[in-house]
Length: 119
Image (tube, rainbow, N blue to C red; front, side):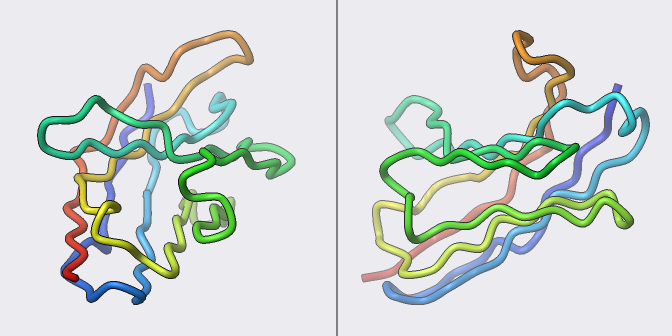
């Protein structure tokens, strides 16, 4: 099991930037990937992007591609979500989650951090 804690959310104007952090503890050595998701009121949870714990390869949803960047610092057991050119539709609670195999689902989740983008 991995414990995840997100931070860095807040209120920002459209066009601005925020960087979210996801600090991991516990069985981080067995982590396959960390994913970022978001949940907006009245909408379904949306995959934002992910990063392989080993190797660092990334993938992104089309809605954020070119604006968001995921990176990791293995020494700090922390994954970052750099969000640029933010839009009001990016407003959501952002969660990070861990999965432990190529075909596995995300099983361990953080508590989430609120991001609000004003127009």
